Image (cartoon, rainbow, N blue to C red; front, side, top):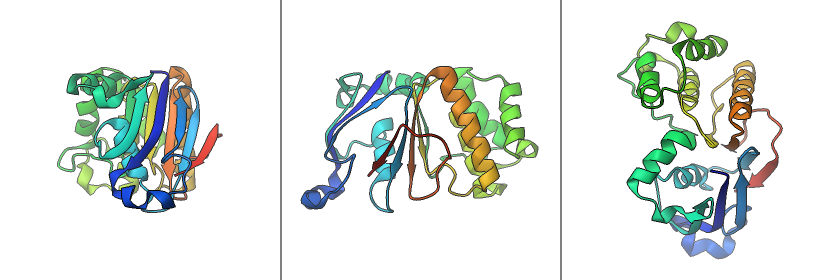
Length: 215
């Protein structure tokens, strides 16, 4: 997948106030390109998590159209979405969507067993770099939110992708771990010539974005 095109997209919840919308995403024509990095800045309640859910196909409560390589995502079957989520688009959600009753290893293996994308040695290397190497067999529920963010981030890398969506990925990280995450992200995306789409209400990975857009 080379492009994501947004055509006059607007969450249904904002429909009654469309005349008041002042955004560089909503109600705009916008093309996001593979290989480029985008920062979507927003205030709380502007719809950034909805935006990620729309691109990932979890929600469809919007007007307008979203197109992948020119094809409307509204026409995609469940099978097409499944394939896209396995091979073309990865997402780190703000609420992480980890399984708290499982160990960290089990959470990672659930994703990696579907894709066979990463050897365990590489995954463990990323865990060590992010300071959570000792949490491999820990129950996810026992980790702090910042530790869980790092687990979910590595899990999002356990697949090939053309675009990766990251919804407030470092909101609970210190600057050192935030920088490590940014370095890993850039390394992974360079290897796959992938696009980066980050949403933020303030704190975000310190990388050189091609475009900074206001939601």
